[in-house]
Length: 615
Image (cartoon, rainbow, N blue to C red; front, side):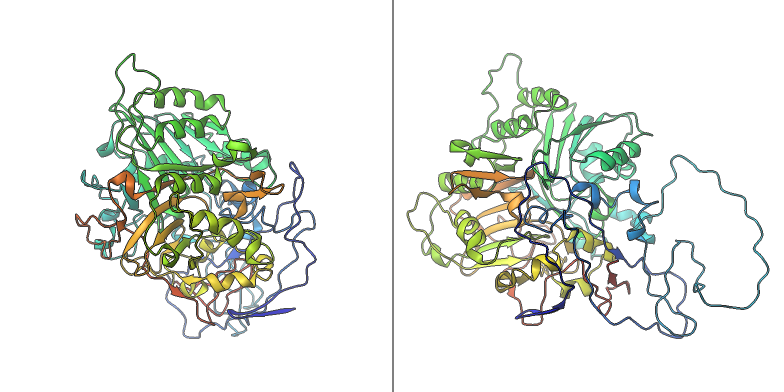
């Protein structure tokens, strides 16, 4: 069956799966298969004859009947229960769907040959090359406990970055917004000026670390431990894994007795623990970092990521009252409320520590999601209704606001329904267009910036990055109306046009794109699971996942609007807000398509010569 649209043509297999079917809470699902990606190209010289690419025939296997690709499952980085996504070390040995497919030359020029080993000597399997002496028996290398397994991310996953990539520098104390991008390898050095790597964040230059808590979705424990300056400081891992995935995560941590775990409760089916936050307790005080990166190397290597980093909050004097150390944005209260929502004994000590510190310097608002069904005033505690409440209470109306577009940029898309009124414009857009207590309910343009296949073809990152952009063909072909909102990712000002955007940002811009009415950086993709959806005639909201972000409102910075900083690198003392991509975004052309993670792109290799071929 083929599906034509204004933005390209896809061919898919028939499937009767219903995207809109909502399973009851607690329903379990079988694990869907993941696509395999081509491995990194070999460093050996190429042979004279070029390989032929397979024709891009699309044959998508139907989803299991008991695991629909739905609004409930889409929208996390994996678009699936956490147990099936994590491209982590614990799954490397046994996951056949992650076997690297490499574009290789067959001796007879017939096309593809698969390599099932990172030590492939270049021979093509199945090709008779004459009689050979039997190979001499080799002594089996004894397994070393700390030896790294083969990586599904390709050969380059464990190759070290250049030395200057880790040159740490403390951000300027005069930095107004405390919003930073991650470092990206392969860029001109100026584009990493002022950007941060995880080693920078955890380095002694930022404080003498005593203990930390890492909230995240994906973990590579061995890699994470190496980013710390010392391996013996206690680290609490807050995760959402269950059953086999949890067992694999615990197995990863066996060599590291200082690693402890807290499992987030996911009581509603298809929810994920998608929050990404670091709590850092220093000799000198306490710091919070809210970010968009998983704790795996691939997310800190060649992806566009972002973070808000708090200042070091000092300890309060002994005997301070419960309300001491609060910020004008009520950041302390909201952070403690978010942590309490986990209902986890492992977080009680962190709640006590944070209560003993002065967070009055925080100038951002916390926007979180936690799983549950909420009614009454609780509806405004989480998800997009929380954002709506903050924009109503703290944002200021602007003249001609009906011409100020809403911009949403994300790496994954959930099911929006059969038409735009089902959730996107009927519910979500109303939140995004709220500006103070103005009675005006405007209908401004909405520019959505997903990751598109045009960028994919020339991206820096190897194809497994596509697995963290889970917009499926089954979902896409049911909401072709959505593509009229799509705009292309381009980040010339930050040097990151070809660094896969895993960052998620939302904002309201002026008609000439020189000012912002507000800005949000968050873990939340464009999905009902992340942001919540109204139920029961709008008397209840259901949220499936944990998410966390920070909202910048000009009034908290004694401004009317944020000026947009057009030239961010090299870093200057400009008061402009550092938007991570170019404004205005360019509307999709008829040939543009969003990245679809479960169809092949065998005719569009990336800059490493790799292609994306789902299994």
